[in-house]
Length: 393
Image (cartoon, rainbow, N blue to C red; front, side, top):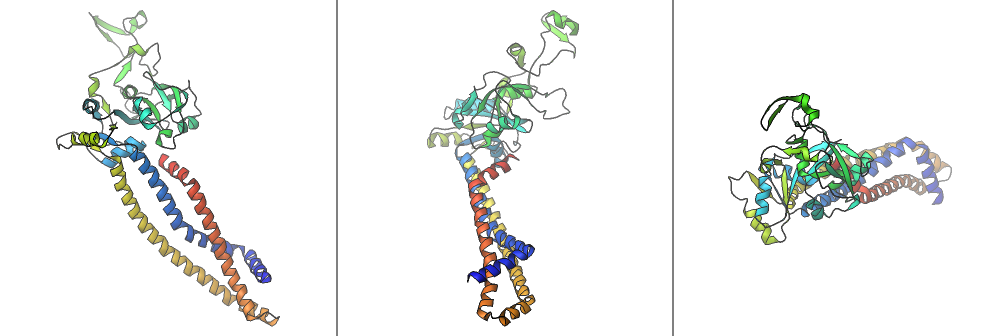
């Protein structure tokens, strides 16, 4: 038996190309359905876990899925902006803590999340260095952002303009890094957190400029009429907020009219959750309230349906590949007829020759199965890293 296996191995080693193609085919046939199911299961767990940790999301009426993806994962454009007054209305209901969310801007492809410091408590996000933001222009980096930018506390990041042609509105804001979060294995690792008012500064709603009443700005003053001063365009707008110029920053209009993309509510119990949801049942309201676990459940149902079609297609392709591999083996046996006759003539029994040919087939199947099992093990161990990388794209 040992001699038979040795001869089978030497034949396969000599025909490396054919053996490699057959082993690869067998490996992929066995791995693809199982590996796909493992990846879908891991991605489903990650999406479900995040959704279950977020009881309710309030936003403008539109696509619930886009609202949830934007608010929870920072990877989709929000359906639209709502007035900050809607956050205050939800808070005045006194049924749940409400955290504002403004997810619209980026800094070097990393999402800037405008919120409040209560967000860190509800998400159980800890700091590895520094502190939370306390004033305009301060930011806290997720662990992945800090690693990607090689940034530390005391450094700065600059926001990217949402519209490069809006020269009179949004302008880049240099934000000071005051804290870096510990790894949470979630979307928070890839975000830059600021106070929601800082996003209003980025939007151009709030800004600071030189004090036109000072002597240094006299050349920019066109006219004065009592307390009213008219200045020209040479007045410098700040792109960085510091303790020295923070008092010069102000917001135009009523703060309740300024935009946020959503709000997250954290009701303490099922009764409070039901009562809060009941306040958003009227058709004439401009806002909606959604349960992320329900929305993501519907999405996962769709994904699982698609997965079933993909698996069915993989099975068909697998059967076709097995048929092709069988044809290769049969043709190989026909081409090796003279070789088998020679083995018989030099003393080998027909049973031994059949065992030799069977050993070659079994060896290919065993090697392909082992490689497929190894790939499945690697996928189960590190598939979550791959899923998070895909979610960052």
